[in-house]
Length: 222
Image (cartoon, rainbow, N blue to C red):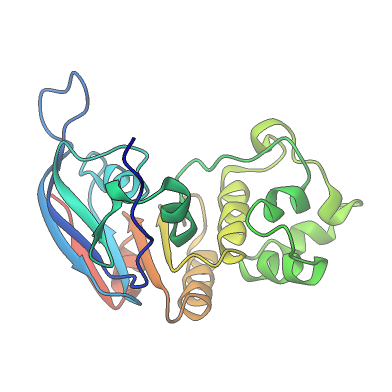
């Protein structure tokens, strides 16, 4: 068994000539993608459905590996890192985040077991869920049902973003974070994220023209 390498101390990302073809696929989901993302960059990656945004996000946290090419974090191939080391440094909020059949507080503390009620409330307020929590008789102790069944799609996604706010990850990837949100809520969310993730790398996969125009660095996948 090959021992994982020591986790890097730098957080620059390099996607080097990466292609991905799913098993049984007749054409690649990603084809020869090369991209350097310096540490601390805030970047929007846009493209139509099927352009490979979600596939790229999954490659960055090794939900799957490239068919061809390499991804490096701080100069180290992420294939050579221990999975737990990688996912302490890079966190993904997917389009359909996994929520546990537990309370709001329990779902948030997956990210940080030591977070107190004030920290949880702050994270929820940042994503605009404080007004919802205020209407619930049990507040943070409200069960959300199987897979978050008691929440709307937008509420579930914002709860998952609140969870990401509680992590120490230096790279945060959000896949379609504003899906299902109105324009003002979307703008408020992105303004907050720019502030909260200042100094950390923020990668937003989006088809929203408003988000794309708001981010300081942008890229389109065809």
